[in-house]
Length: 416
Image (tube, rainbow, N blue to C red; front, side):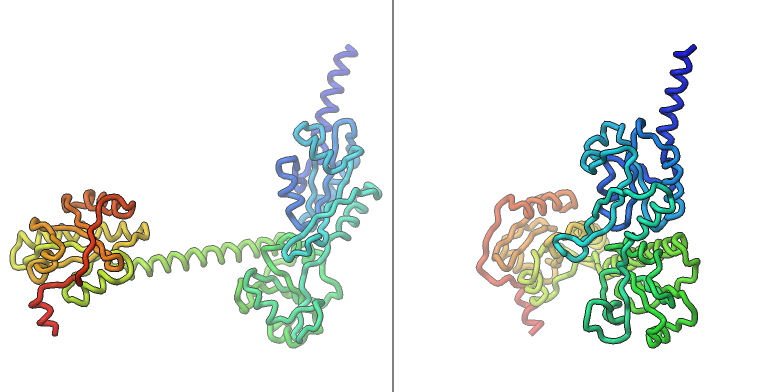
């Protein structure tokens, strides 16, 4: 019977130890997330390190109370040092007693680099009651809120309103207040959004700025999109949940607007893109293609619009070229797609480049390197795509030329 009572007692003890420091505002920390959740943030963290032997139900309740009272202002977490995976973490954080409370707060970086916050660790040695733990944690919530003025500044103690808004990298949240000190909530938010959002404060004596923002009562909170000087008034409750929800909504809107702008830009580019290959009708067209930027891909076609069969064949050939041009655009290829009607003005060009008589024929000409290459395969999308792949990879033989490519002489005379 005694052994049964011992087992029951042991089970209850283990259960109570595992149930310690349980709260919806308490983060379970371990060796895998400690750096990200604690050391890589600017916010103040209260972390309790515990094990079964040092189980303290009374302190557990006090820590839960701290997590509830300081929600949004300070992060509260716990580390189970009985877990083998946390053994190195507990050693590294110099845990010498159980339970032990460490407070991690922002401190100046040793490198003094802008945009860098170092977390300092302090072992809390005060009275282990919620009131005193909370007071100690709150006293470590420093302010990164910028005092804003309408005048020119000669020190770093204040920043000019226009200069503050001119920082285009981040959005801003500005508090207009009649309080002598920066509120705890705004101090905490300045740490929580460090590197993501700039917070500023305009006091009641800055009458010019308050008039500019049309502030009639305090507190008033304004949001500015990154790079914008247009204030957006926050009209919700002045608490953590309301303000953070507002910031999240503004971030969502900004993201949607950015994505929408990108999509519109993409659509505009697509509108500007014409898949139709251009016809070379003049000597100027020919030289622009051959000697201009990129590689000139020329199709020699035989097109007689008065004959139905010729029109049908021509439409099929143009469709092949349109598909090739579209693929070339998607991969950012170097080819420009043109075609010459051999019936009207392509005879000399065919002769000079020794193009086969069996049309249509696809070829490329690089005027800068004075080289060309004729595709002697079938005039279809698959065959030409394979030919172009060989060209891009530098496979196959290229031929050089030392003459100026020309259309038929009679057409040149007509142009003159």
